[in-house]
Length: 317
Length: 317
Image (cartoon, rainbow over all chains, first blue to last red; front, side, top):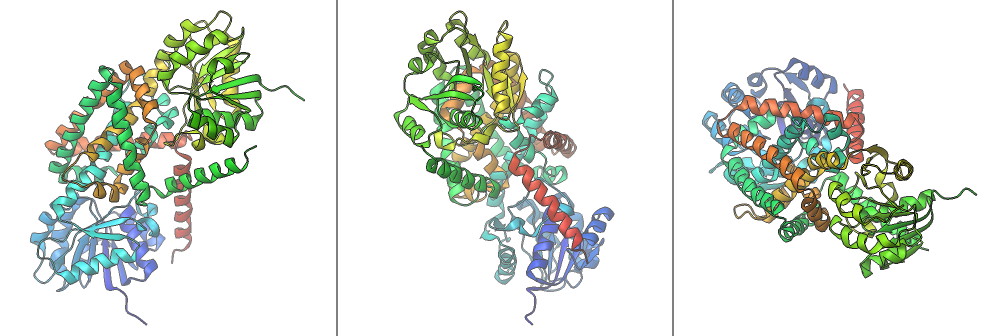
């Protein structure tokens, strides 16, 4: 019998991402023993019931003792306390990794806590849904998506490769990136979209001239896509914005500048400027579909539409 | 044999909405004769090939002669010229309607053109996809969605009911609304979401520090949902903003005010304010799902996730 990819893996935080990772590790037989850790009694009870970990514990330090890999999957704001608790328990050669959506702050927080001979290899699997908690997870979440590994300068190449290979084995494509550059890329592709979605849903919620029931009824006109994003986990996202402030403010500044120009074009009836922007943005959508990074459901709907068009053509009179 | 709901229906503009309406009318046997009109030679050729209309013409006036119902489904900016051309050809008792996303400007444009004894009953089926053109249409587009009928003051009740019933027969729920109020409701549920989506995709396209390939690769973090909306028809959306300026600027002003407050919360590290907003916005999402107005694909994914959770529970050890 071949030995598992890691002898003992600990996943701290058993929400959407942590429980999905645990399920994918179990499915792939990638751990000799998989230990789940969560601070919440209710989450631990669900995790026990769902059975995606071999053991479920409350104490990260007890779980980390003897671990070959520890993955933090809590909101980033909880990392410092968890890191302080578990880092001293890490054995020589152990790897500490995570799944957080910010990386510069994570390296800054955790690197000073690492005992000599252990490895800090942060990572960010860019995948998710708007649902939260251990019941929302599923093993297929990562398939076909990108994982960004952001090792600090001087990190051990073998440890980097071990973490990269774990993500590959759960279905992801892996790219290495400098932590600061990661934070800039994600600020525009993820953090700003979430901020804007949260904001417009809040604006709609505050209106007096339009009732809540009208907003809900007629959401199919575009608004509902924003509500899906704005249903994402509040604590996780609070911590993202608190820990990627500079990059988010930079992207937000550019967004607002552009929006002001658009506002001016509407006020002055500059149809040519509006049409030019609206035409340019179509091309990016096509590139995302071509790169296979559209939502799987959207990709399916697109395929269905093409099939319907073919049927229509066949039924021509 | 029962007589069709309308003897002769003319649909002007055979893009996504016009061709979907034509298909739905045909499927339901709602017209004795269905005439499609489009200014584009290429679109007319596709319409002939797809066969969703009994006849396809270039000239709206020739098509409108003898029609019981004419539905405009072109970008709103083309209404005035089309209205001027076809209104004189309308017979007594004929109804002129449309599917445009703005309604105040439409009433203002078309009402003065109506010959005595004819009826102007504008409507807005709130349904669509990001795809355009006659091949993108399908008969099921309207099912379960809302159609807003916005008759001008003093409109004939029988004509209003006839238009409302047509939309019911293609699967929609119908609500009547004052044109000005429609424009306010849609400004927040549809027009502002599109404007913001177009804007952020433009901002991302202009970055120097983040490459286009990075934006595309990592779009799964939230950005891709905006690109879908920002792939909508440029001319149609240009005309929406030019023709609903006041309401869009009002909603945009509120949005920007709220975004500035959010920016300040990020700059000053006010985690409580961020978490409070992010928690409040979750409730609206739930209401949209409960009202059955979530995207059908999303609803399906939600059901699949629930089924997976049930399987997980069954597989507990």
